[in-house]
Image (cartoon, rainbow, N blue to C red):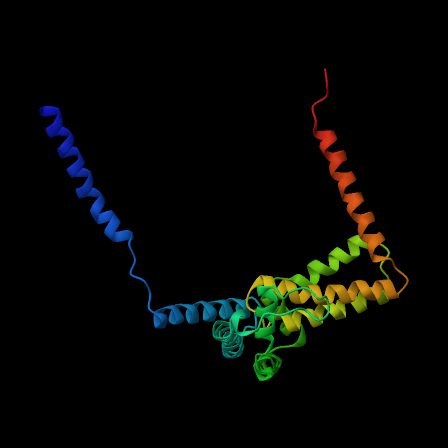
Length: 237
């Protein structure tokens, strides 16, 4: 009997102690207006961080540039929310004949965003920043994909000429500026993929064989990994 009383008391104590914790960790769901307000603050913070990284040493100019960026981020978000992939009818890609994926439809929907939104961003940035600083902001949008992808081409084509590098860099910069009008990294990567195909077609047209170059690079990387793994294995007794 005493044992039962003790167990009941212990269980009641557990409920008493855990109840406040449970009530503290349960958050009230945000209303749509509260979600938008939180998102607005996130975009403002991101824009402020990006402009701060430029070290402009001009608070007024930094504030104006941040406002231009924040306005663009919010416009992308709002268009994306109001025009989901479902607003684009299912169909086929006329280039490949394959059925449009949900991501294809989302990109089509996002690409219908008014051109003025993009133009306002670029004009606003160029009014406040140098061209080099504008490019730095675009790199923030696209997490440095231009430099990363260019380095990939240099690794795959070790004897890449200056002319080829300039042409490829031009394609990648076009990808970057187009990609800033998309919200998710999957969409941004898909835009870069379009221009990567252009880069590879250019190399083929310029006397290169992209398929062979890429295969040689993959084989080289595999061989290097295998050699490193072999080296790390303990010597057999």
